[in-house]
Length: 444
Figure 1 (tube, one colour):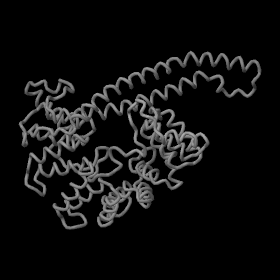
Figure 2 (cartoon, rainbow, N blue to C red):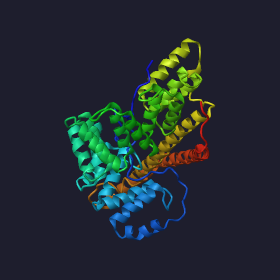
Figure 3 (cartoon, rainbow, N blue to C red):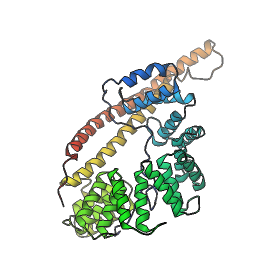
Figure 4 (tube, rainbow, N blue to C red):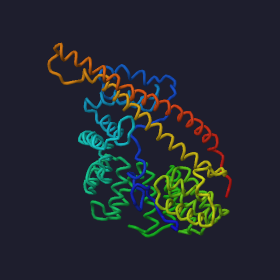
């Protein structure tokens, strides 16, 4: 059985502190999953003329409106068209955005090699976000050999342009000694700089450094002060740290009620670590009535996000339950009739539906392109002479390609139909979540 463990970084890599390359890297442009046509947007209408006339900045802004559904129905295909027009003129933000879309399969197939290509083009023009993304790729080893020195260099370039996430990464590399000599003083300086530029991850890291006494005298008061600041800014890992400390008496007296409250907030914000910690509390009755059904549900949510402790605890508990004759773990992902846990499960469903919708829309665009290529396979051929024979061959090939294009066109339509159904389900869940968001959960 895995005991509660302190994990303050997200679950993609095993880090001791919050690193902004872990978990979700914030997109340069927000991606919405809503397909409804919004009210007319004057900014969108004003952009169309300059964009059509070749203004690269306007083309990029128009792409942003299409990808976010701002002033126009969301359309990833149109977003890509306008980003490419802008990128063709060397506009660095558009190059970076195309890289991000390729890396994360948003409107374009996931292709780390192409993502790296676009990031390099944008970074070589001094784009801070692209420099940051290159650093993240070298840190994680995506399409390149993992190289902490290269990662640090790119993060430092972006940090020198006051990009808060990059400043936090530079601090983290100094804290860990990755690509540079470990230097807690430098780490603290960079975390403070990132925090001053609005990084809640840096605030969380400053709290953890104070808690551990790294580069400064240990101070739980300072640690909690930073954690509370980060939590006020919506940082789920800071919330989890506060909850963990109250759960285990780190710097404070054990207070299971406060632990539950903060862990619940973190879990409702998507923290897999907090879901695991809450599962532990319900399994062993720490300030709450012991409830294996709730524990299984929470461990499962944590494990579904890739949290190894949640997965281990789920497996161990299910073995114990099976040996005692219980079939609780064989009931699938049944919801638990408890408002607080229902909200956590609902928000997990919302995140999953959003990801599914983006994936379906992206795959539908890929099917469209495949169908168009097939339908024009003759015209797109490389025959040099356009004599009667080659024209006949072209016609035959186009006919064959048109027949072959039926399948991907049907696939694209089916994907969009499925995405539309998921949007309806998402809208219902979001409406329910919004109506219950201001209702505090009952105390355990």
